[in-house]
Length: 148
Image (cartoon, rainbow, N blue to C red; front, side):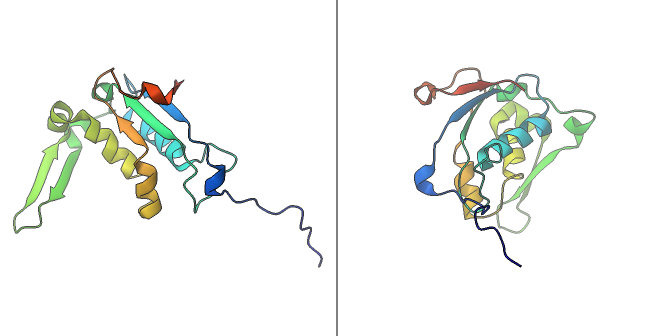
């Protein structure tokens, strides 16, 4: 059986990388739906040149992280846990407390869970900037405003 060699898959190279920045407003958006769209852009799945083993994603800026919403009774159910490494060192922070103290960490946690758990995933995650308020310091990147 003869195969047609002209229809080969083209793989992305680092030299072909074009980094764009997108600006998302989280005001009134649902946490999970917003996070999945942002994870898709960070990975580069929105591009036709997507390659799973290369960082071909774009940068994302999120403003108004303090205004993100959750549906149903998740506000009372979600608990963020981390361990200090010492005996009895489990720390639990409810959603409401985390929203008051560090609203940007809620989006960080949700998006990080949707990214690959590898070196490549950590490199992709570094292109994410989250701001609790409306002002951001990323004007030099000329972000493209995205509305979902």
